[in-house]
Length: 122
Image 1 (cartoon, rainbow, N blue to C red):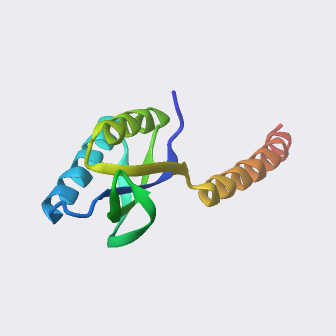
Image 2 (tube, rainbow, N blue to C red):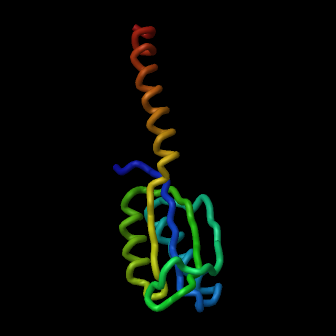
Image 3 (cartoon, one colour):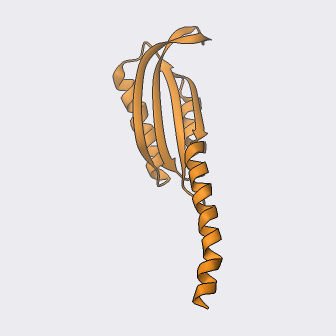
């Protein structure tokens, strides 16, 4: 069984797409996550911004940022969906490293406290 991790996703749509298209893609992302027992925890629409360099003859893009929790299998499906969508110029999914570090530290503390608790119980 895969552990639940926290991720960040940013994707850029073509700037000429209506807001309904952005909303439809966000709903599709949420549906993919729901299929993998995941959920969106934060959603920020950054709007249309100038791109640092031209992508597929586009100078501007419509940015969306999402934070979500899910098992690792959802990332592959999200990547596939966004890669095949011709309206998505770029996308990137990364593990939320701050959360991962806090999780590692708390697990290490738990492991350190476990032997003491077992010895006290004996």
